[in-house]
Amino acid sequence: MNIILVGFMGSGKTTIARILSRRHSLRFIDTDKLIERKEGLTIPEIFDKKGENYFREIEKQLIQEQLKYCDNCVIATGGGMPCFFNNMDRLKSIGWVVYLKTSFEVSKKRAMLSKDRPLFKNEKRAKDLYDKRVGCYKKAHFIVDADKDKDITVAEIEKKLFGEGL
Ligand code: S3P
Image (cartoon, rainbow, N blue to C red; front, side, top):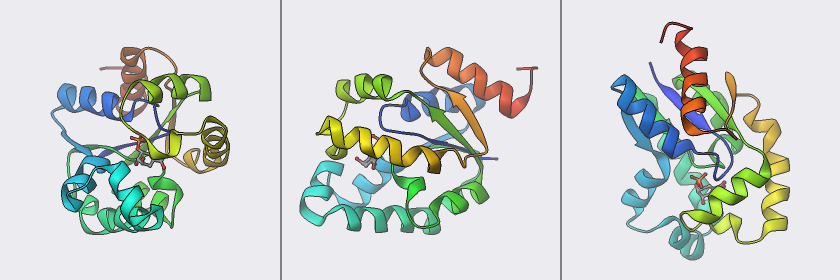
């Protein structure tokens, strides 16, 4: 069984995936980290030097060549991953896809705090991207409100995936 977290930048995919991995003895995978390791470059460097299209191709390959062999993993995806090619369908065939739904304001606050995000440099463009992506994210198996505290979000995911018992 795999759990795959999707959602906009700053929705908490990495944080929530780490907690779920500890609580359920699942292997933690972060697709951005795998790509950085494979390319020997940071995400901003890949965008700068090779361009976004190249990055999207690498994401697609990662799903087809690595993620599909995952078992008992919790996967934090990059914010755009499910919205290119037929990646969402492929992800849904690999595991339970959970959309961490955040408001733009909360995403913005969190995204600004942490790592360098090439697509969050301009707020207006980031908002347009957010609006454009919502329809894609909604195709996930489950939708969870991720504006709240991380423990509440984790509990909601567990309730949806494992039932009331946990
Ligand atoms: C992107 C989100 C980033 C990273 C890249 C592109 C996007 O991941 O994959 O900067 O297109 O939304 P996070 O969602 O972890 O920030």
